[in-house]
Image (cartoon, rainbow, N blue to C red; front, top):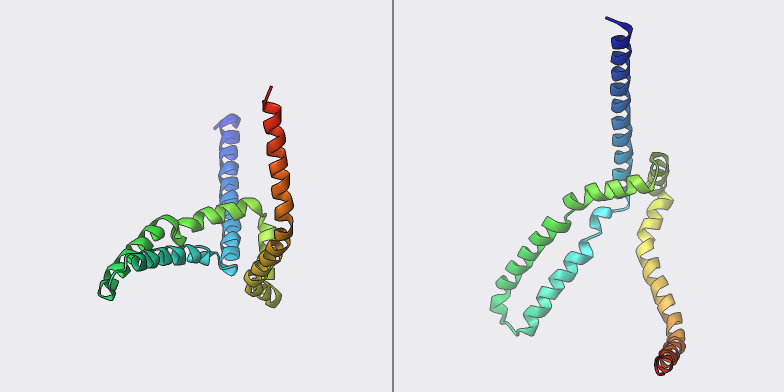
Length: 169
């Protein structure tokens, strides 16, 4: 075997080893992203969507003044709607995309640190209280915003009036 072939074989072998290492690193990174998603309950992200669709069917059922004897029909359609949602936004569909998304957004080291935090008692407390804190924060913001709405609407009307006058020759 000549030196060129030996060098080529060594290079190919090195590339193969590097590729195995990259795959192992990617798998480890993805596993950490998957663990993060598990810790934060990402598999429950779509629960409100399912509930909203169920409510939509229940409201339509009520609007049609269907007799209670037709409740089985409602439940049948709700079940069909759940199947459509499962097919399109079920966890098995979202999980690979979310793992990729979080793997891109955070390094493997950062995901390990996030996982450590969210597995801790404080992290669990944050996760438990975050929905309520977000809702209350939105309420506070909305209450403050109400004071600004009339003034913002007036500014919008003033701008519209000024633009209208500039259109006229």
